[in-house]
Structure formats: C-alpha cells, structure tokens
Image (tube, rainbow, N blue to C red; front, side, top):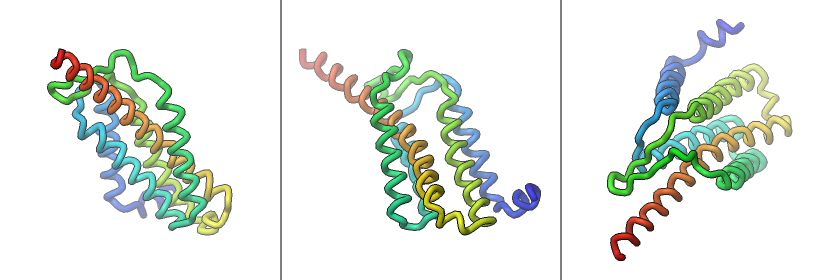
Length: 173
C-alpha cells in the first residue's frame, strides 16, 4: 500500500519536499539573512499551513479558529523567549547574523509531512473531515507550526527595530 501511495503522489510534491529539505538544511549552518527573507519565510510557511487547513476542511469556522488560536498561543509563548545570544543585526547592511539551527528544518518538515499525511488519510477515509477532534486538532497543529515561524520573525524584527533605534540615537547625539 505504501508503494501505491508514493506512486500516486504527484511529482511536484517531491520537488517541494526537496526544496524544503534544502532550505532547512541551509539554516542549520551559521548564516546571514536579510529582512526580506526573515519576513518571507514565515509568510510562505504560514500560507502553506493555512492552505493545509483550508484544503482539508474548507472554510469551517472551527478549523480556522483552531488554527488562529494555535498561532496566537505559540506567538504569545515564544515572544517571551530571548533570541540566541549570538544573534546579531547589522543595521547598515540590514542583515541578521544567525547561528545555525535545526528548528526551521523540523518546522518545514512538520508542515509538509502533516499536509502530505492528511491528504493521504482523507483520500483513504473522507469521513475524517466530519470528526470534531480531527477537524480541530489538526488545524491547531498547523497553527502551532505557523506560530513558531511567526514568533521567530517577530523577535528578529524587534531586534532590528531596537538596533535601528540605538543607531539613530547615536547619530543624533
């Protein structure tokens, strides 16, 4: 049965999987990223996450609410945590210097594999859409992934704003 599932998976899914592995693996190394990428990654992964909810449950209010609550909860929880001590922002270059981390790769794989496995489960058992537990917990899982991505971006933006404020204050002094 596993072979049948893989054989019926569209080829583009494997390309997306490879792209996410590559993007996540790059983030395991110390690197420098610009403001645009810091903003774009959570937007893209959040859109993929929300797409997972909508493609599985349509515009069901409970599913969308579960997703939004999980995003907000993860944001509230993670915004209280400091960035790693090695994180720096270069205001002149508008770039962040970040230590490598496996977390982005794990989050990308989490969203991707959740979407893939849910598509398989719903293809085999369409009645799962009607189960309240499935229809609430799954969107909350997607939302938790999105909240982690969003919290990282917000924390980095806060660092950039604080650094820009300090730099601007030093110039006026």
